[in-house]
Image (cartoon, rainbow, N blue to C red):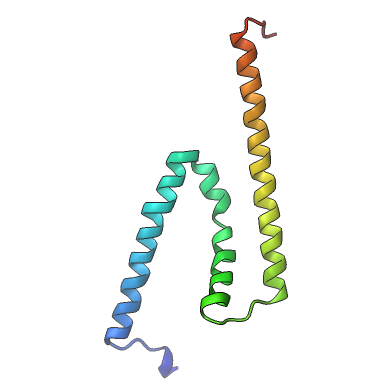
Length: 109
């Protein structure tokens, strides 16, 4: 239990400072830019992907083991994100097709 106790040292202060700054940087840069570019739906879709990215980066840079369950979960999340994005793209295509019909003079029932 003594190893979990926070001591007033430069290590604890640097960890808290880096956590605070990394969260602020992520929120300010990536999420706000994504909301402005595509809307809040896209930001919400990619939120679970951050877990996969963290697992892969820890395996690459920190040497952690990447287990089969993590890899299968990453594939499932990627497939779900692809399916949602494909559905959004098809919906936008249909909306664009409907709008072009209104401009050409066709009647809407």
